[in-house]
Image 1: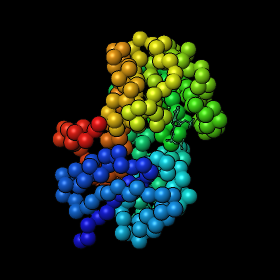
Image 2: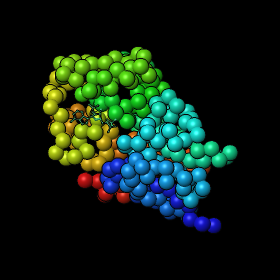
Image 3: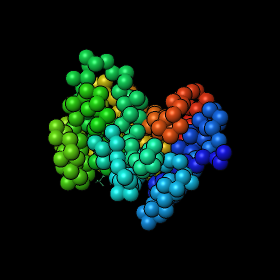
Length: 276
Ligand code: ATR
């Protein structure tokens, strides 16, 4: 049988560890397949989609900035992709319909929310920073995990209002105002792209944080953004985006191969060795 092909599309994409992770699992489970990076412009998406339709490529992951844009190329979106309008996994179904699913929601839940005891969820107050591609997945993951006290702040105010149309109970805070409200939050989640470049810095004051705050950054490369370093040095529990990345990938792998791949120590070591 011919080698199965998988890929990730996005722009920029060179930082992605998806090929490393999926190729590790293909080897582990003896699947004759390869997964590659496709750094493509918008006008090349149709070409990749055609390759899925004619079965040259079995499935793709989609990352920024195409998670929403790619929907117009699909026959339909399913499950979490319906609710978030954000697609990160594409494949053909049994009737050869091109379908888009979202595994970021599962990724966020599996990585950070599973371990919170149910009785504590009602009390948790969460601040999400950013209203870009990953924000709707985080909101849905929190809601599915029964965390409803969600606040969001974005530099461009209009974009946060757009999310409120989708998620009616979302509380919006102006970008210039969140610093003084910071002490109210049990979780702060960075869903902006600030931190992808090691020189990136928030201009906001983060000193007014609550005791026992947990800080989650959706960025995994670099492993430690300036914000993670700041909170770590202030003894705050921090997580980077690596676990979310791994679990979204685990679900994509399952959707394509019907095998639930193990997140083992060798994989973790391999991924960590590639991070800056
Ligand atoms: P898009 O904006 O196209 O959805 P994204 O990478 O999915 O792209 O989202 C980037 C997020 O990071 C946005 O929330 C963006 O804020 P704006 O909506 O105001 O652009 C945020 N972001 C990026 N650079 C930022 C900066 N220097 N300061 C604050 N927020 C920033």
